[in-house]
Amino acid sequence: MLNFNDIMETITMIQEENLDIRTITMGISLLDCADSDIDRSCEKVYNKITTKAKDLVAVGESIERKYGIPIVNKRISVTPIAMLVAASGGDPVKYAKTLDKAAKEVGVNFIGGFSALVQKGFSAGDKELIQSIPRALAETDFVCSSVNIGSTKAGINMDAVKMMGEVVREAAELTKDKQCIGAAKLVVFCNAPEDNPFMAGAFHGVSEPDVVLNVGVSGPGVVRAALSRLPEDAPLNEVAELIKKTAFKITRMGQLVGTEAASMLGVPFGIIDLSLAPTPAVGDSVAYILEEIGLEQCGTHGTTAALAMLNDAVKKGGVMASSSVGGLSGAFIPVTEDAGMIDAARKETLSIEKLEAMTAVCSVGLDMIVIPGDTPATTISAIIADEAAIGMVNSKTTAVRVIPAIGVAEGEELDFGGLLGNGPVMKLRPQSSAKMINRGGRIPAPMQSLKN
Image 1 (cartoon, one colour):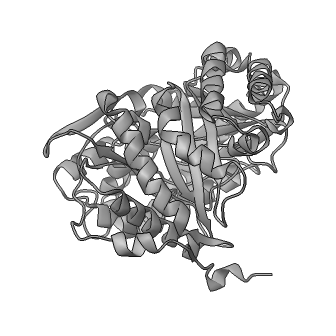
Image 2 (cartoon, one colour):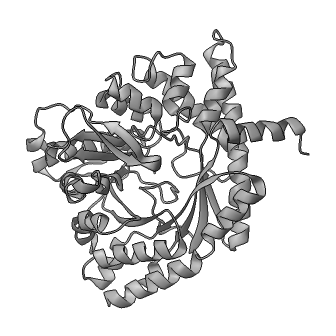
Image 3 (cartoon, helix red, strand yellow):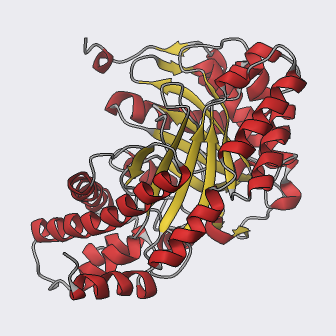
């Protein structure tokens, strides 16, 4: 039974507190598009995507009009393209350009899945795809890429880690005239989920249905607004309870949108990703939630504890609201995409070391961080290895999306525009990690992997 107060509360959340559905993402399997001829394979890929996703944008816009709920992005994720490269051979960039063409045809914001899964080693097609990532991202507009280099069950593939440091740097160099955007469309994972609807890391896992619809909700502004109405001396257990109740309301809206969109498209509804995804808009910030809890500024002492409580409460509230929770689910901390994080980074309250500690208790990892343009590839690899170790040992998803600011002077910023935002160059340790990275090999799986 609809309650007038509930309706008015939802309207306020949308109009004043930046509540939105961040994305509806259609996952499409391309396994049946494999072919020994790369041109025939690309043709099959294009035809399948443009057939299955032809109504995705229209359906999203229809639901927006019907309920007045903003759906910010309509996206597509596909089977890791390295699997198709294994069958066809040839230049993987052909697949990237095919994905880009299909994305433009159906009108989506991004398409993810120019990806490889190499946590335990390289199979056919993996190295070829990884080496082509910088060109693929430089020569396309909407394609996103991800590589999974580690897992709790497999350990960390350090040969892949070394490669990815070089790939991240090259991706930034090839797009230095576009604010190094190539690196902003590339994520390096440990324990990557197969049903993540968020870019740039989305891909359609091999255990997923042929076609599925996943939803990513948002709402940091809603949580912050709710907390602002609490007495300043309210104990933290009451703070956590309010966050949980607010996450429940946000997730119910995502469940409504996802169920209806899947029904209209005639595909199964997959999961809701509960992640609080911030934007550069003032008020729509995870950092501001932490400050509302009681920190003078995000990044100071106590930040990790406050974030752990927030992440846990969001998950508890969301799980009660939907039986289809998946993806990453928690609180995102992308620096350039969060107004509070940007401000804290500018004032150097927030350091990369503090961000690394925060990633141990929240969703994903070191995300959208601008680093010096002269950072060696081995240092980027070491950052990836550190973050992967946190994910591996703690049986959680972690990721790295750093952007070397090629040609940008110290004190200046990169500005990507839109949801990707802007941010200052963050300082790194100058000491070298090259000897460790150049060893290669594999960091063995931890004891936590022995659960059978």
